[in-house]
Image 1: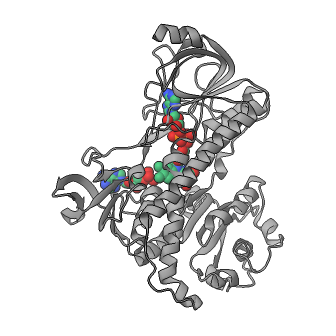
Image 2: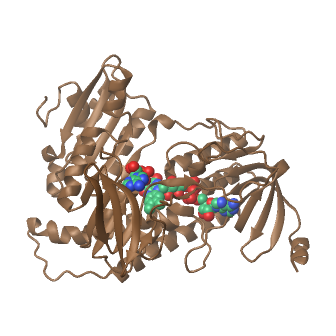
Length: 484
Ligand code: FAD
Ligand code: AMP
C-alpha cells in the first residue's frame, strides 16, 4: 500500500521547500512565492482534537490565544476595579470561562485558516505532515495519513520552532502540572495556581488567572525581577504585579513537585532554606528550547550548536549550500516578529534580492497590565558600555489621554547618546506600550536622534505624546512634566 502511495505521489521538485509553518516559516513561503518561486510549505502541527493547522506555536498555542485571554480577563478585571471611577455601576458581573475559551478558540481557528487562504492567493503548496531533510536538499515528506513523497528543492528553509523546557524536578503531568499551552486551556479557574518562572510567558499566564480570581504564586530562581529588562522598568512592573495580587517569590529555585490528593505540593529553595507551597495547578514556564526532532537526516550536513540551535550566519545560512534556518530554531530572541523578518530576508536573498535583519532593533513586549515594551539598550547596558548618555522620563500621570483612560500608570523612558544624540533605547510601561513602541522602533531603524523626535508633531491628547515628551526630557526641555 505504502509503495502504491509512493508511486502515486512520486518525486516533486520545488524552488523552495519550507519545513515549518509557524510565524517564521509561513512568511518565508509567502515571500518566496511573491518572488515568483515555486514553493511548498510543510507543517506537522496537530491540535488536541487531532485537527492539523498551520501557524505553529504562535497562532495555535502562544501569542494569539494568550492575547485573546489577556484581553477578556483584563476586561473582567476592569469592570470590577475601574468602571466605578468612570461612574459606571455594574453589579453581578459573572464569569463564563467556557465562553471565554470558545472566543479564544474561534480567533485561533480564524487566524490559522487564514494562512491557508494566504497560501492559496500567493500560490504556495501547503503540505500537512512531517518533513525530514536529507543530502542534496532532498526532503522526505510524510503526510498525516502516512502517504510519502520525496521532494527536491533548490533551497530548503528550516523553521521547526521550539518547544517548552520540562523541569526534571517537576515533570509535566496534565492536567495538574502543565506547560503554557495547558495553562491556556484550563476550563475552570484554579483556586491556587503555581507558576514556575517569572519570564514573559509566566507573567502573562499568571496575570490571566489572577484576574479571574486565582491565588497565584510565581516562583523565580533568579534574585532580580525581569533581569533582562531595564531595571527602572522592572521595579515599576514589580510594584504593579504585586498590586494585582501576584505573589512573586524571587530567589526561589524549584526542586520538586508531588501530586497529592488532586493538588500539587511544590518544593523550592530560597535564601532561608527549603520551602513548600501547595497549589491546585502548576504551570512550568521556565523557557523554551529549539526543536529539531527527526528534522535532519543523518546525511543532511546541517549542524546544531551545543544548545541544540541550528547553526547559522547573520543571514540565516547553514553550513550546507542552499539550506537556511530561521525563527526559534536558531540563535536570537524567541519572538514571532524576529522569525518573520528572518523568513522574509531569506526568501528575498534566495531570489537574489537585498535582505537584512536589524537585530539591534527587535522590540520586546509583555502583554500584562500595564503593558511593558522596549527596544534597544537598557540603562544598565549603556552604563556597562561606558558611553555617555542622557535620559528623559515622562510619567503617564501627566498624560491627559492616559488619565481619561483611567490608566495613568507607568512611564516612557528614552535614552540617547550624549555625543551625537542617537536614540539608544526606549522603555515603556503603561497603557498600550506594545503599540507605542512601534514609533521608537521606526525612529531607531532610521537612526533618528532624540531631536528628530522632539521636532515631530504628535497629536494631542494621545499616549504617543509620552514618547515626544520623553525625547524633550532627555534635553531637560519637556513641557508637560517637570525636568529633573
Ligand atoms: P513555531 O511557531 O514553533 O512553528 C514551528 C512549526 O514547525 C510548528 O508548527 C511545528 O509543528 C512545525 N515543525 C517542526 N518540525 C517539523 C518537521 N520536521 N516537519 C514538519 N513540521 C515541523 N512571541 C511574540 O513575538 N509575541 C508574543 O506575544 C508571544 N507570546 C507567546 C506566548 C506563549 C504562551 C508562547 C508559548 C510563545 C509566545 N511567543 C510570542 C513566542 C512565539 O510563539 C515564537 O517565537 C514563535 O512561534 C516562533 O515561530 P517559529 O515559526 O520559529 O516556530
Ligand atoms: P523565560 O526564559 O523568559 O521564559 O523565563 C524563564 C524563567 O524561569 C527564567 O527567569 C528562569 O530563571 C526561571 N527558572 C528556570 N528554572 C527555574 C527553577 N527550577 N525554579 C524557578 N525558576 C526557574
